[in-house]
Structures are given as structure tokens and as C-alpha cells.
Amino acid sequence: MKPAPFAYYAPTTLDEALSLLSEHGYDAKVLAGGQSLVPMMNFRIAQPAVLVDINNISDLAYINAEEGGVRVGALTRHHQSETSPVMARHAPLIYSTMPKIAYPQVRTRGTFGGSLSHADPSAELPTLTTTLDAKFRLVSQRGERWVSASEFFIGLYTTALEPDEILVEGFVPELPPRSGWSLQEVNRRKHDFALAGVAAVLTLDESGICQDARLVFLSVGDRPMYAERASNLLKGQTLTPEAIRAATELATTEEIDPGDDIHATADFRRHLAKTLCQRAIEQAHQRAQGKQ
Amino acid sequence: MEATTQKIELSVTVNGTRYERAIEPRMLLSDFLRHEIELTGTHVGCEHGVCGACSVLMDGEPVRSCLMFAVQTQGREIVTVEGLGTVDALSPVQQAFHEAHGLQCGFCTPGILTTVTAFLETNPNPSEEEVREAISGNLCRCTGYQHIVDAVLLAAKKKQAS
Image (cartoon, rainbow over all chains, first blue to last red; front, side):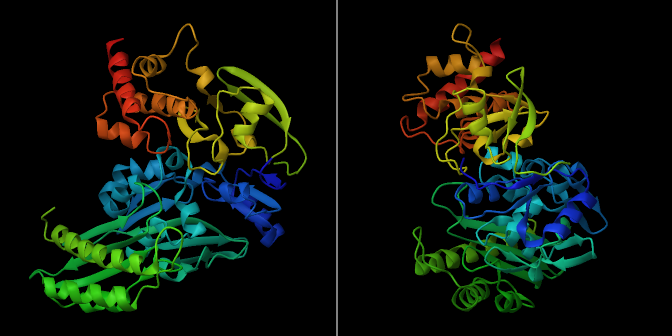
């Protein structure tokens, strides 16, 4: 058998799951969709002594519209997000990106909370939630806390989660009127992890000047890379081609940190990031003007 | 809520038959199907979620059986390629793959047949682009996919006609 032995628990309530995590600490791993954890266990990169399978805690799967945004349960499958009218209406950036995440058989199982907690810097959901300034509710037996996406993602596969905590839901704020969004990425094969990518959201004021902007990159750093200075540079500006080029230049020369690997060199990733960033800002701008 | 590295009693329905086995929690669903209940139609390729050869249906939805532990299927209904049709009575999807030459070596075929069977239930009249999306998680190294796409489109026609 490929994975190393482990003790298996399948609690049916969140309380039971939290009590198990509190008891086993670093020895335990939470199993949600398993589309990243199980491959890691098959390779024995991960060898948790205890597996806490949360798939039977069915009340953690929901997508609910709320005042100012949408609340998404940790166990919401990607396939649910991909087909949810509520997600389409209140978080169109996430909705429209879902088909780009892996393959149908993976989206059947993969979950919202699992992808975020795994914190792969080339995955889309960590970047999208950072771009939309989402926040996550982390719960343990000690209590609960809300953590913003930008504080949650700390580094490569590393988050603010303590070993006894579970990310139980996220709140994704809805974009204000006159906002636009875009996700651009390049993959070797469609649906693979992106070699480089970027998400952009923009909000214009009534005269068309950029009021708010957030640019966040994926696959070019150890976590979702929020280009704060480039985003700020766009604010207060009319988004002329020159303004877009200047922000792109700043973001992709100073605010990302691409690495080399078997799939692409750092230089190539930076080159991709630059082209994609410009396209993302342009598309978000078009959408904010109601042109798409 | 029992926890153990020792064997767990699993009861699962596969292709309409109930199976009960005592298994280790770390046994993958793919290995359970092949080694425990000897349904070797489900093929194992990469065992890390890339190739799609091991795709089966769980409660009607396509899943990769190498990325699930068998104990997670407690009380569920699994359908493998053996459950789609028989040699004498192929399912519409299998018949279409036969007629359109949708396979060469056949290694990827079980995963594609199960995936496509579920896909045509939710999208009975797909475009070619939608078919290509639906099988994007299944690698085939022989065909170049063209005949597979033809076969899926033919299967859709057959299902609608029947």
C-alpha cells in the first residue's frame, strides 16, 4: 500500500473533529477533499499519524448570500462553487475561475477550505480570496477568530492555522458597483497548475477614475503575492495605457519573487507575469466600465 | 467513531452488489476495487491524480479512486467500468467507443467511460468543446483524443435516439 499507516477518525460533528485535533496536535491532519493531501500521502511526503476525515460533517458545505458578500463553508466542493448561481452573482471572479481549477473528477471532491488550508502558491483560490479581501473563520476548542486572507497565507504551504484549528468558512465580500475583475494565467496544459498568473479587481468612481485596485499574483512567490505598491499606484488615476504599464512594471519587477523549476525559469515566469498583469488590468477595467 | 490503524469493517455497494470487507484505513479505493473485490477493470496509472485512468463513479459523480481511501466509501454506491454494461450488452457509451474506434491500447478507457457516462447524464447534448473539457482529466497516449471526442459525440446521439 502506498500511504504509511495512520489512525483514521471520521467524526460527524465539528466538536468531535476539534476535540481530536486538540488531542493529537501536530500528529493529526485534516482530510477534506484529499486531492492534494492524498497524493502527498501516496508519495509519503506526508505521513500523518492521525487522519481526521471531515467529509461526514455535512453542515460545513454551503454557499450563502449575505449582507455585503457570500459565506462559503469549508466543505463546499469546487463543483458546487462552479455551478452555484449564488456564487455567480456575488463572487463572479471565483465562479468564473472554478472551471480552470484542475479537472472534473478533482472538482467533484476538492473543497474550498481544503484548497485554502493547503496554501499552494500556484493554486487559484488562495490568490482569489486575497484579491477579494476575504476573511476566514478559524475554530478550535480554545475559541474562534477571523483572519483576513492576506494574514492567513504566510508562506509555502504555510498558513496562520494552529494545529488544533480548522478553517470552517470564508466570507467573500461582494465588489461594489463600477467594479471589474479578471484572472489571467498560463499553463502548460489547460487546467494544470499555472506557470504564472494574476488576479485583478478594480473599482472606478463616477467619473471613471480608479478608486480602488488590488493586484495579486500566483505561482511567482511562496504565497499569493499582493502587489500593494502597484495597486496603490493605480488609485486616483485614469487608467490610460501608460498608467497600466507603469503599475505592471512596478508589480512585476519589484513585488513578485518567481522561482526556477523544471517547468519554467524565473525570468520566463516574470515575463509571463508582466504580460498577464497588463491583460488583467485591462480586462478588469473593461468590466468596471460595463463593457464586458 | 472508531480510530485505529487496525482493520476497519467496510460495507460498500459496487455495481449493485454489496461487499463487506475488513481493510486497513490506508487502503486506496483503487486498490480495494482491484485487490479486495477483484474488479480489475479499474486501471491504476499515476496514483497521484494526474492521469484519470482510475476514475470511477461515487453516488453518480466521477472521482479519482486513487485519491480516496476505501474506508471513505462506507455506505456509498460505486460504479466501475464493469457496472456500465456487459460484453453482450454494451452501454450506449461503450457501444459508441466501439463504433468510433475511441480506444487503442485501452488502458485509459475505463476511466474515460465512467467519466463520460456521468457527463452525458448532466449534459446530454454537448458541444465538442464541452466534451474536451469533460475528458480534460483523462490522459490518453494513443489516440490523440480525436476518436474519443467523436465517440462521446456519437454516444450523445445514441442516447438521445434511444
